[in-house]
Image (cartoon, rainbow, N blue to C red; front, side, top):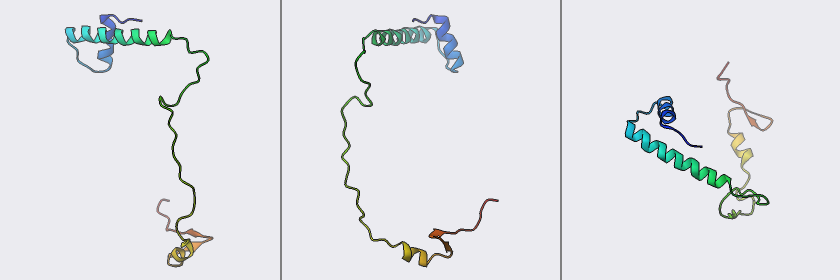
Length: 95
C-alpha cells in the first residue's frame, strides 16, 4: 500500500494539520516507508510461534501472602457513630 499526495493532504485536513507542499511530500515518503515496513513484517511466516505478552520473559517476584497487622476492626467500629452488621452507616448524600 502506498499513499499519493492527495491522500496525504486529505488525511492532514481531516486531522486538522496544516502541511505545506514540501511537508506533505516528506510526510508521504515517511508514511509509505512505514507501510513498506508493515508489509515486510506481515510477509514473515509466524506459523507455530506462540504469541508473547512481553518481548522479554518477565517473571514477577511475589511475596508470601500473610497477615502482618493485628485485627483492630472491633476497636475501629466501637468508636464509629453508626454501625450495623459490621458495616459503617453514613448519611444519605444523593437522593
